[in-house]
Length: 223
Image 1 (cartoon, rainbow, N blue to C red):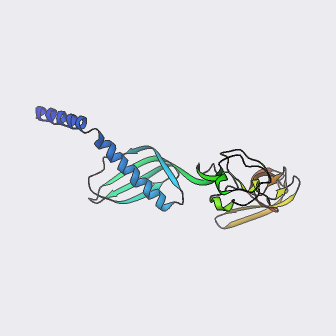
Image 2 (cartoon, one colour):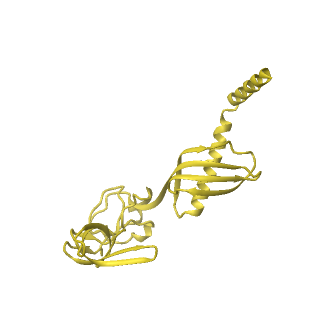
Image 3 (cartoon, rainbow, N blue to C red):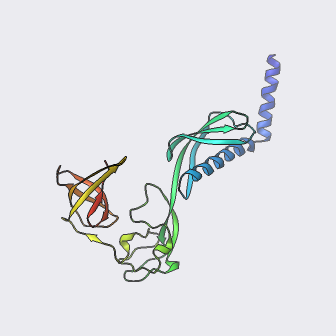
């Protein structure tokens, strides 16, 4: 019996050495399937799966269903159901990206943006700057109100017509969550353009918070 087990283990070792790409191919297929699923349920332009691990070897049959158990983006747990009824769990760090408009060369103040002045580039979600554009046609033909260097994100505050709100302006602080909306008075503590982050003092609590300047009179804050 021990001899048979030893022979079987030896054969498995030989097969693994003879076909080293088999396990890699399986992992690549799983990664592709999970990526396709994520992009089908989230409005992102691209994702990367890092540190992918499985709790079992997937069977040879077709993958029937993928379920996200928790996460997305960030550390995510998937459940993969196969045609033979088996279930394999997968864990991965999911990094999501959006496309934003960036400058291809230096863009000068008081000059209109030409089509070849801009292109799109990937930006990790959560790091997309406020006021970023996702379609180059949104900026083509508009006039820059300041100069920016090549490879920089083109933001709404860079284009003529952007509203500058000065320090000391009275605004409404708005916070929303789960259908609940709270509004109170505030005052800006610095100059900022619409779509910028801005520091504002809550006139009721006297605490300074940071929010997004939605328009000249409104700042959105989290709570």
